[in-house]
Image (cartoon, helix red, strand yellow):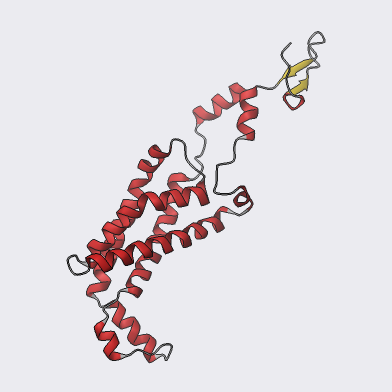
Length: 207
């Protein structure tokens, strides 16, 4: 008789000639492999609601770096909204990988999951591009600087301010808006799916 681990055995009282019955091995393996693959096993002890902001911090730093490089290289030839769109599109695979390793687990197959999540990233890119163009036309950065200066939180050198046309506050505001949007959409797309009636019936048959 094939050797089966004790955790896969139960006592069968209905059949005296075969007192040992066996659990289906497939179901047991599913139970032991149910945890998704994260960057480190210790992340399983951290709630998902906390892991998502952790991934958001990493992605924000990475994206701000990419956006800063894009602004330095292309600010004279392209508009701010176009630079944001290009930086966001180029960062999509990196951001998806970071979110997978921190929050939802490394998907199998990866390419298919990336393609499924592309509309999420694309919608965030379009929203971010729209918000960037809107805030730039509204002169959001200069208004925030004026407000902070009026409240005596910071002081600005007028000559230096005129020579440097930054978009720091605009970028921060857009990242916050797109981050909130991305959180809810990502949870809907990558979160655990509710079992359908067909799945429930199949599971009952396996048991």
